Image (tube, rainbow, N blue to C red; front, top):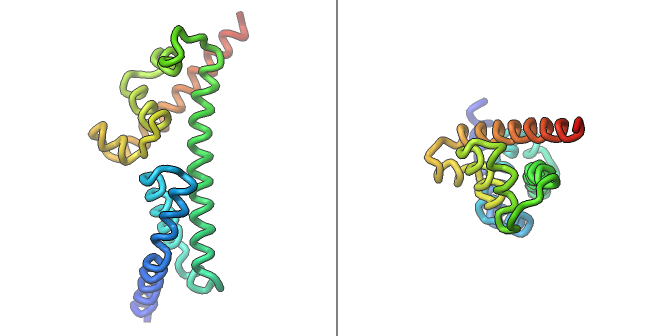
Length: 169
């Protein structure tokens, strides 16, 4: 009986993906303006679908549920990117660069190791996806995610230290 239910669940997911996959990609590209990020968003929405398949099977509108889930995934990705950019922009507020073109380099080179700087520049400034950055750097996706998290945390800590030092003077 359990095997039958699992097969029905897998078939439901496959059919829903076949029906909605193209539309989900189009919607995600429109929102994210980047096909690689869009593909990541669609995959994340499908992960949620797999995790909640039993509830979605009983939902009166599984297609609508999946589109709404994708919208939440896209919003979450945008918020994360906005937070990363705000950390960078906050650090830039106190700096007067010599040349506008190297604005971000003036502030962040002293705050980060060369490896962390390269990773942050790739994923935030150049908008590489984590898998793209990992491939470019020759590391695993998980290592790339962890390095990025730690770099942002170090950058935030150093920025707050600098801000504190400035307030004390």
